[in-house]
Image 1 (cartoon, rainbow, N blue to C red):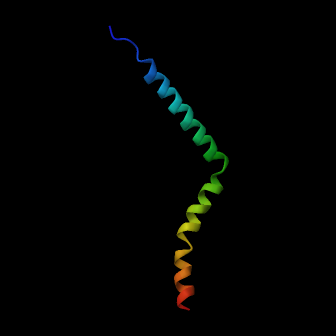
Image 2: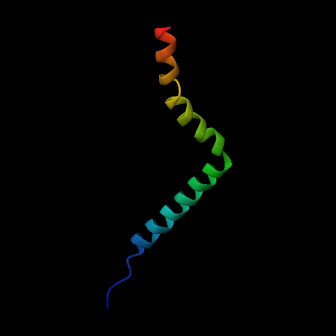
Image 3: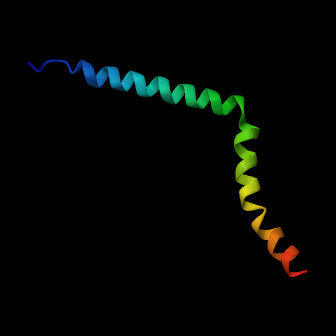
Length: 53
């Protein structure tokens, strides 16, 4: 009979905790996470017409 791999089980639990914590953090600040993405995609487009005009 094979021995239980406790290190694997521990790592799996730790990863689940980490993912749960990350999801919770994302739920707390969904606006903050969405803004930088929008800002990073928006400035290049207006910058080109402003520079040409």
